[in-house]
Length: 409
Image (cartoon, rainbow, N blue to C red):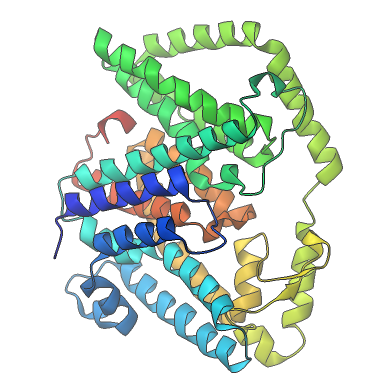
């Protein structure tokens, strides 16, 4: 069955709802829930597009966008070369599969955007709503495991927990996107829209509070930058609303001053204790491993490979904490070049979205900066879907440049 673009968006929304409600950002095993998420993803993708991309037949499409051609070629190299290398070196098939699946997530734009661009924008809105819902659900599950200890924010660093719900990029997306959507609703006027805006701020506060409670330094900093970057854009369109929000922010500072000061102190203390979380030592270990031979440097150790990682006490694990070091370790310098070409090809989409719809752009780019720059969340489903949202939304803005912010998305 070939779904419409809206049907594919609905399947993605359902997958994200299950993901946030019952799964984990990085599930340890495939259970019934994960199988259901996979089934919904397959429903959204169909079979023709994945086969066309894997076989290279997608390159024959007429008027193929440049970023898409680069994506198909990069995916082909990053799939097959490290796969053959990993199997040749004898890594466990299950470990190989655990690396290949996140690769598919990272290239979801190549698989999904040509299918979603055919619609009228509803698929894009369903995808954005699904990502926000997943983020809120992960935050709620974190609060539940923290026994709803709202009073601990700014007093002590709260534990991430064994399933690391707050590492999901969708949590930061919801923390930024929901206030942006609330501002968009309030700017359009009417008591119903203003009431809806107030409702949206509640789950946004839960997400931001969770990130502050667990002292996620980079996420909090990126959220703050995102809010500040869009102030001039909002000022040009709704100056009175900006003044109202500034007044409300001042009241919040007065009421929550001790909590905010405590949260800042916790961030400073974590900076003092953790620093860069051994990212430099981790990168040095990767360079040492791939530097042992020209073959290892060019092709890496393949999917499924293990490394003695100083960031986790020297244990042999299948991951590093940054996309660059992970890609170099697994796929070598040639794989890193392929990935860099893919991300560079996506950069114009980010710039186009930032110029046409800054609220949506910062909502998407903040979690992507964290995931692709300094976090293991580049391997998560929601990272790939955020990239997909960025590209498809940028294409819609090119077709309809008069869009007026996140609330119109």
